[in-house]
Image (tube, rainbow, N blue to C red):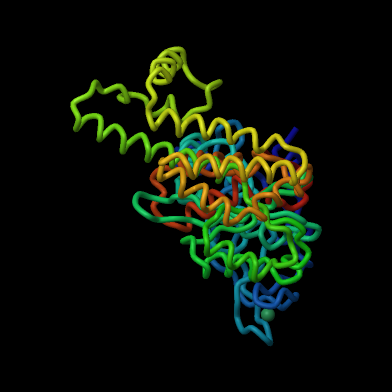
Length: 416
Ligand SMILES: [Zn+2]
């Protein structure tokens, strides 16, 4: 079987034919596949997409294609220029490349496909290409996917923020969290009103008006924009964010208490206790369990804060908003009597947002509990895997590519 036969099967172009493949002149073990335009075919103008008379022919150019058995494959073709009455003398449009860059479109989809499974650096190494080529391929895939994705039928979204780089740099992320379709819809810099507003406006007015549930934390700018732009939806406060706030409150109590104990010259009972108090008991290591048992013997503020949080877990198990509300009121009342200031702050804010909190029970069944948390973890993992990404655009591309479930064009042959 000839290489040409294979190529015609996996990648056939209407107005072009493959010439005889040959080894490249240099010693690089590269297969060169010449491409020829059919004699009767007039070139297509890259400006307007219409067939136009030919003008002249440029020097042959190389377009990298998917490698075969670790042998590089390049297409060689001399682009024609057309004489177009509306666009002037411009280069022709060819089906294997977008015109810019040295990679064929198929090879870009191939690299982008691998970049979802491996780190970009690994992809570049495995396929003997550069990190920049991998990034360009992902960019191409993401742009195509964003233009061609279908946003209709979305009923629930979640809004989350994630820390980016050191210091107070945040990204705002909007997810679709419907039972049948979970994906990242939008990313923007900062976590301000303006950033979320930009995202929702981009998703469109009709998109926002059809939403039944929106899910977020207690971050005020988000609450405000969601009420304004998606006022028809039931606003749900997310379980993940509330438990995170409680965790932070415990940590504050513990840190304050550890300082006081040290000042008063007591044994450092709280040393190495951080994770015992923050983790759920079922996730503790043996050593941490021993430490927790030890801690529980003291009537420490940290321990009391911990027990309040553990008790609050029960809240999520209620079925009806009525009973959950009763539990919430009692829990808040207990915490307010506790003299644990960081925890009291959380209780006050929960009281203030009581209706939103109880909406969680109205959305039960539609929105699954761990979904925002799951996305948050995946986003963090993507960012960690792409360490070295300093530029915002790169992070944005990586997140869309990994979590956006973006569509791909239909092709005759899938290379990866
Ligand atoms: Zn034209």
